[in-house]
Image (cartoon, rainbow, N blue to C red):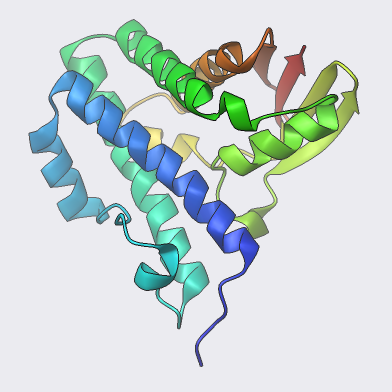
Length: 205
């Protein structure tokens, strides 16, 4: 029985596309086309340019989306490892910041908020943290100029660790991306802290 595509599926597809474009950005910047061919062979292809309804598996919508989430995580970890090997970690961090800035520049005309709750809505539609049913992100605090949300568990680090990288590298790169993104849409400060129980994301504007 064919499943119906819901708004949350389009949102998840958009999150995946933002991360897949990060892959493309890194591949082009660091001339990693050969590694990209290996990655797609081992971890699967990126989504296509077609409309979601024309490419998704209507008999297994969740499985199709989840496979692309996992494939993207693995390809990005492999790209990160190669960039650190051939360049250095700081260069990779700066590349994430620049990509975040570019995404922010492309979206800032669509982002309008007057409090933390409204800003969180935009960020929640942007960040790929597993599948929606994983419920990774939980809003903790919000007011007119402040926002805090938690990642209730780490679902990213293992993809880096599988390749011999430090698991917390993902969060270093996430912080760099977010700093670049938020600087492009306004005078907004972001911090990320890894705590024993969860990861704390804080935004002040």
